[in-house]
Image (tube, rainbow over all chains, first blue to last red; front, top):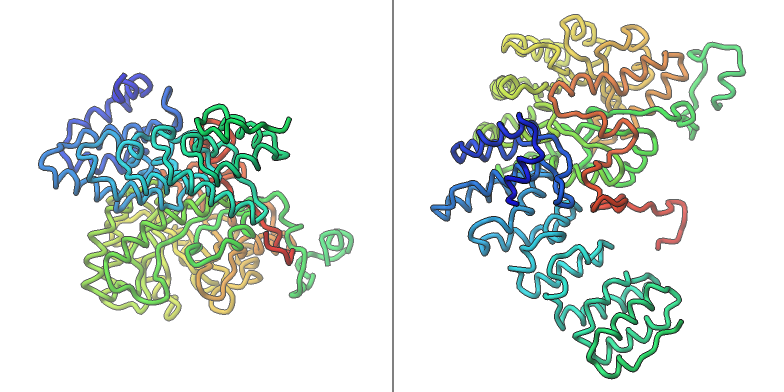
Length: 241
Length: 332
């Protein structure tokens, strides 16, 4: 199913007609339609795409229909939308990133979403979006994951979490956990799924601590590490029942 | 004094003195909802947001204005407008308050003509954004030729975009400035029902209402209206086309001016339905003409957009802000 067919399956006749007209229009009219979309497309969920709304889908279809040549004009048009975006426009723009041409040109803009304090903007790049896993360098990827954990958001919604796991991130997680524990705060148990392939002595001590935690979720996380890792000292650990 | 005393004693509420010392006014407005159609939240703290939500404010409008000192470049205007439809909108939602804004070039900065010309070219990029409910706040400050020029240009923009206009009336020569603002709006063919004239007082209100405009009143200590005067205005003119706001900003002002005024109206015998009109409904009716206000977004006292639920569960995207205990010496 293409994005357009998903839209057409759910849209009303008037909505389909509006989008058809705008998709056939010249670039300036498309950019204006991007801004105006919620006036013509009612905000409601898109069947089959979690967390997407119909106005957002219409916006993504509009920008993915822009002429991609010449490259600089294409990039400038989309950059202008970023520069003046309101909250929902940001969400649409970031969710469109995997569908845009010249993926490398959006890297800085994508890392700006990771720096954003606006929850929905961060979520649009972080969750259900393939762009970070495909194009983020390791340091930017690690920031994305750490910021997600820091803000108590569910890392399991990040696409490519397992493939992009790395030693630096595992070490950063350990440091983060030590800070949290020193402050008398907790660490969400699901973050420990990022460490089995990168075990060392420091992480081993963390897993030992988890294995004896009064919180069952921590003990389950420890068991998961023990089950998954090839690191012999960790495989010999046992979890308190 | 407390509500039970007011009911016990056989005197008219209007005759009761109001204590100026700490006083339980929220008891008078329990369960009431308020809409503050003019408040500058970028200048306010998170404590204000929490207090406003506690007092029953469910939605607000933040007009674009000047920042206490003049801007020197176009990019700062752009970033300011962006913040009104971006970060501030999100910040407000975290406290359960629906945030709308009006976009415009304020009268003071209209006097920097070269910059004002650039801003006029920028405005169309913002006035069509979701949640922009009007062109504002625009009008006169010193009543210079430059202010006249850009006021007129923005009235034309309002007509073209089909948006209501939120007019700032000047502190000095207020009566003349108010009359002039209305005359120019009529000259440009605006429907007075699409124009909200702000910062009225006892001297200006009659003419504004007689001409068919909306009359907004700003309850702002020392320089604008006091709320005791406001009670008498509503008693005299009734609730039609009148609305109350705080215009709270970076000056000595009160973000709770609307709920406090509502409480005073209850105490002084203004009918509850009239209070609802001037502190909630009229502002909605006036600015909903933009097509950008959906009362379902806040009428239940929550500004939580259902589409923002995370994967359909109750974890909200961005989340609601946690509440620290303000009275505890411990900060955790």
